[in-house]
Length: 130
Image (tube, rainbow, N blue to C red):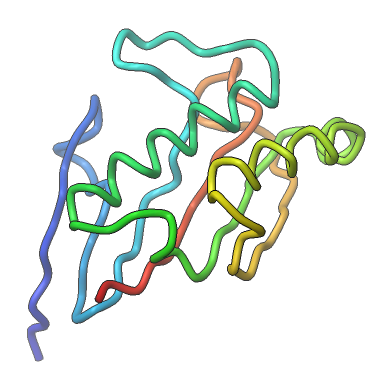
């Protein structure tokens, strides 16, 4: 049985996967990393998180959505100890990005590596569209 999908493809891997796939009123997003248009990656974890969320916001916008539509997120980090040592700064910035205390479920997972060795965080989200 075929299902109807709306896809958004972008970036250097656009031929391999979609940044977002909408099925019904649910948007499944690929993990977003802290890479800017020129391929630059900030060194600091907090700066990486902020840029990753900017990329999340850009994908949401392609589907007429914003941060209020997110219901679930998973953070993949390369060093959970570093993340927890900076948790106050990270969550303060995250609160500002959402514009309030985020109304989402969240999972934090440590991984051995991300697609680029300079990356420290990848954020994957699920959103419900209105």
